[in-house]
Amino acid sequence: MRTKRKVFAYITRGEEENRELLVFEYKGEPEVGLQVPGGTIEDDELLIDALYREVKEETGLPREVIDFVGKIHKYTYYPEHQDKAYERNIFHFEYTGDPIEQFEHTIASHGRDNGLTLLFRWEPIKNLPQLAEEQDTAIELL
Image 1: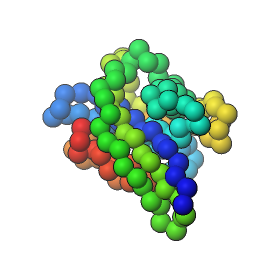
Image 2: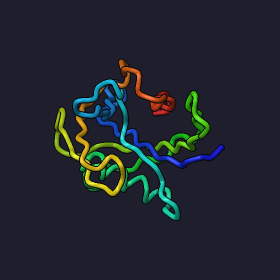
Image 3: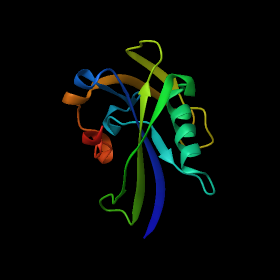
């Protein structure tokens, strides 16, 4: 079984009682599910470099509006009916930019997601809908 290394970013805003998580859906493909920014760590790429690259590629947010809080979890995800595993490294950022309720961003990358448009919005952590592919596994650690 081969293992791919991944990074995920829980980007939050607000005080603990009203904290919200930045989530997205693919434009025109809601069946793919609600997700958080993240992706694959390239060969010979540092974990932290992959994290910032994926956040920038998927959200378009500059580093200046997200404060790094820390790494909150690492685990291995085994998707059903597949002969592979994913090492998932989950990090927390606090959003400090101008208030914005929702936005869309088109990915510009060398990956297979190049040209896809993502629809972003904030969801209250207390009533968070289920995220795709168990991406909400570490929400309780926020």
